Image (cartoon, rainbow, N blue to C red; front, side):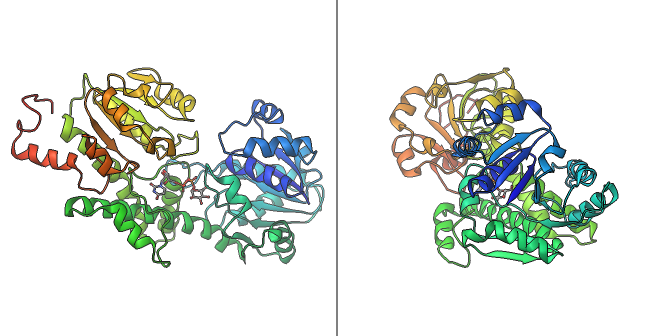
Amino acid sequence: MKICVIGTGYVGLVGAAIFADWGNTVVGVDKDQIKIDKIKIGEIPIYEPGLSEIVLKNINEGRLSFTTSLSEGIREAEVVFICVGTPQSDSGAADLSSVWEVAKEIGKNLNSYKVVVVKSTVPVGTNERVKRIIQDNLTSNYDFDVASNPEFLREGSSVEDMRDPDRNVIGSDSQKALEILRSIYVHLNKPIVECDLRSAEMIKYASNAFLAAKISFINEMAQVCERAGADVSVVAKGMGLDKRIGSYFLNAGIGYGGSCFPKDVAALYKTSSDQDYNFNMVRGIMEVNKLQKEYFLEKVTKFFGKNLTGKTFAVLGLAFKNNTDDIRDSVAIEIVKILRGLGATLNVYDPQAMYNSKKVLGEVSIKYCLDKYETLEQADALFVLTEWKEFASLDLEKVKLTLREPVIFDGRNLLDWRKVEEHGFTYFAVGKRTNGIEKIERKKLYPTAILGNDNNH
Ligand code: UGA
């Protein structure tokens, strides 16, 4: 199959590379010349495990090429995937200007029958409008069909997710388009959901909102567990073994972030409001997510006070999740900014997101460290904010010896709390009644009894 992929962000670049790896001839299009020049020589602009090898292999084997010219990119294509960004606009809705622009250009440059597939995450009705825009801009009499093929790739494991999906969803009102799309995915032997355009568009939002709901549910359970003396990780394990519930996306933490959940949940809420429906649960998902970060920070200010001037904190993790260098809507970054705003100095480290973080955090009161242990030097507490595996295996003895005070705020429940407490740390996690919580509570009753007369504590 001859395929054109427009947009070389996470979805487009992974899509183009894997379509090519499946034996298709693929042209990737992006208007960013510098980006395209870099990709052509195998310099991938994002950190995504396994991706650069596949891109290079397929370029070298002649199945994958890149261009900045949309007309050149779609010339030979039978299927054109639109994979441009749909960021959140001020109203909460998805900003679809890039999708409209691309649809216009496709219309102007259509030179044979093509299936135009929207892979970007777009609200209900978008595909129909794409069809109208292409139609309105046609300069030829060629026929075309529009289809929706939402993606379900997670950053950090998108190569694996695309190669081994739980399902593919293809929506169209054209049987011919469905047949062509089916032929791209059928070799995977995975379920293919064929449906109408609007249902395909909705499946994507419903899936992301449901996953976000699982996270917000367990985050709210964490608040109850912490107060009631239960351990949310154990509760999640016990729940997750029930096949009807499933164990995924039940890790309590500092709230979900990233370029998808926050924007897609807000967009679904906007869609429901536009349809005169008040989607109470979706509103709740967003509210809980915002509060989760605040509850976490409350522990810090209850322990150290609200004025953090003179305090230095070690921060492990800046990316919005592990295995990525992406910091878009990263809760870790927001927490760093808030702590800095309260007067603290931060020694930060992330295995992949240092470059991106520097761009948004700058240099004021931030020290960028070369490894996880360097952050601990002269630090009054350690914060774990992203669920990178390498943070779970910290040498606790070394951490204790290097920190000024043995205090840990674990926003991802990454450490084994019994071990941490046995090593003599004051430990705060999420949804566990650890010794840190008990210290705060004792402090309420006997303000000077726990840590001597240091009023700052
Ligand atoms: C998400 C979906 O998982 C993908 O299926 C979807 O294709 C993608 O959005 C998209 O719409 O493009 P992604 O944003 O890459 O993928 O990351 P997730 O792994 O879903 O994590 C999102 C956030 O939730 C992260 O901040 C993560 O740390 C947090 N999270 C995840 C939790 O706090 N707890 C969990 O149990 C799981």
